[in-house]
Image (cartoon, rainbow, N blue to C red):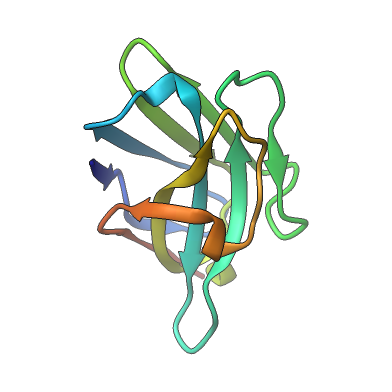
Length: 125
């Protein structure tokens, strides 16, 4: 199983970025995918999740209304559109595969089995 997160970079406050998570090695449309982030000096935070069906999406309060998670099952990829970025969004962002097939979403990191390598997002003020 492989997950490759990309799309991070340096952006000014109020700007936008789109992260991508390309996957391989598992039956993509059977699993929920989550996005997490780890800011300097802070714990890992679950911020967005999309179940295998893509029928619903879930967000942490810290990003609700600004970030949008989506998936393309044909491309085995998940995306995170990030708008109205703030300096406090600066972090390494990770995508991860939920441990259980067909399951719903969770922001508990222990529910995730495979992780990408992370992509750094830096938001300047």
